[in-house]
Figure (tube, rainbow, N blue to C red):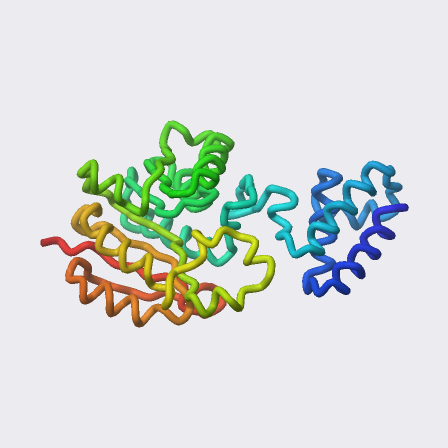
Length: 288
């Protein structure tokens, strides 16, 4: 059997199982199996596959049919044009989170902040933290998480991109370790916290339900973690420091009100992602 024949069969099989991205997923899995770029599959359609390759690929397709996310199957995900190791039990980075990272990078460059000290809260795979350290050559970044699995994967990604000299991975419940150690004067705190409400958690696609609940569930209204993190950040940020958060599309106004009422911040701004949805909120620590 050649690449084209197996791809066509797998596409049809996944589609019958209700996988909307059946063709794309079949191609991504095939490209990973053969260790080639997906586009190269098209020029090698007639490549005859070995029995061992066919058997391994069929196992991957069966996993996908069971609604296991592709990133967990191939243990890899691209984010900000960088490759990240991904394991089950760790949140899979989303393309929309790139908007948050790009905005923070531009903020540092526009304000000529050459050596920012940054904390990424709930770092997961380390995608945000590693990307910021990679693209901001003078940044010192700490990624924090409560999950042992996430910390292990984040450290692996930090080492993979050779950023250990300017990065650290720390176990902490939000910013509790920094507050305990009386660490202050941080330039930027960035986070993609859990923000899915209890009701929305029940309606998630099967693939998303395979991801860690700790990284998704934001309590009854989706704002539980923000209400802990925002005041904590106020005690760790320097005066004028930036708080940058990813948010749910319908949470902007409520969070803006909460941040303003805290009395610790100014210049609260909601920003849209590339799809025109409210996706980020930014605020500066007041210079009292």
